[in-house]
Image (tube, rainbow, N blue to C red; front, top):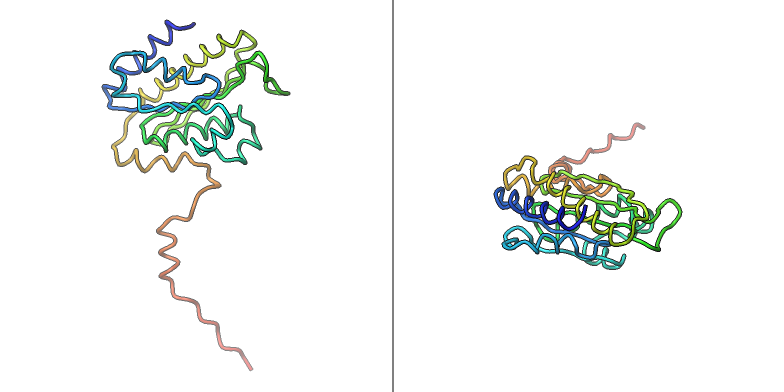
Length: 208
């Protein structure tokens, strides 16, 4: 599993996205732009690939993708929560149809208790509200191998979303809000309007 797998997957993914008029953004940490590189190596990829974010540091994840400090402090850079926030942030900032994120520990150093070398979290998000996450534990197979296998996994996840149903454009624009955590929900406009138009309740007269 290596460069030939990535090239074949990249060609297939670009063909499907081109046929379905889908665009892609990537958000990468441990792979340092290798997913975007694999896709843009294919001639004619510019009609599908919009941009790639290389967010190696936590500051970059916050500044470029909007990952919250509390997420990084609570769960760490290598986590489901951070990977999910990275994918959603890329989708929002690039205004594409699909986005994929990768954050992991390629090694040889960087392991912490519970997070060994070779641990990589992936997330892929679609503008229609679909979101998938995967955790892979590749093991200490070498930095280059972890990165190459991560590229292949990210391309597979994009392929999974690209093959799914494509709703109308209006639905795609509105559905991205569903990806945000429930805790961040704001009251709907309809509820606010209903509260404004409700007449205040008058207090009943005091009995003497």
